[in-house]
Length: 171
Image (cartoon, rainbow, N blue to C red; front, side, top):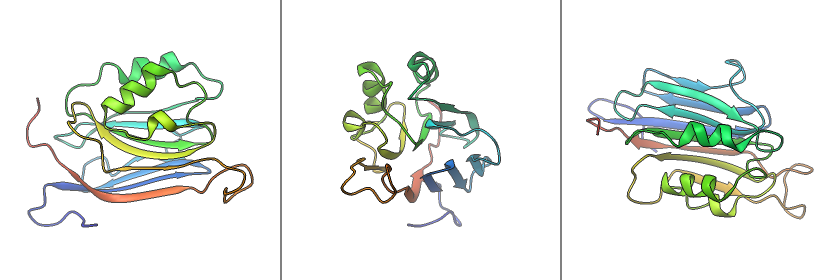
């Protein structure tokens, strides 16, 4: 898809979920690379970066262990989002074991259509926003299945690219 160029008010997205965690580069915004193993802000579970939808500035990036961690930490992170906040998610290892109904509803409200089907060791990448009216076009999901997994015990890693519309004003 298109990139950032003259007169373009969108950001180019590159989102990867992979064995070493999440790589979340966002070209054309001040925060260029949001999460990476080099920045030491990725881990097992859900790797989430919150970005200001107007300025493109990184608000916060954290990893949430969905196997052995506390889902309440994730809920405290995503409940208070402001209208227009972009939410970048890349899974690593297990995105779903600790997910409860409230967690799935919050991600659905951010625009996810696949969160309701997430299960143990599925691969999932997603970009949504607080206050979206429709489901996000920025989402991929591969089910963990011993019959179709690319790696022993894990489905293939996902990569996604696209242009994310930039908000022109804060709500």
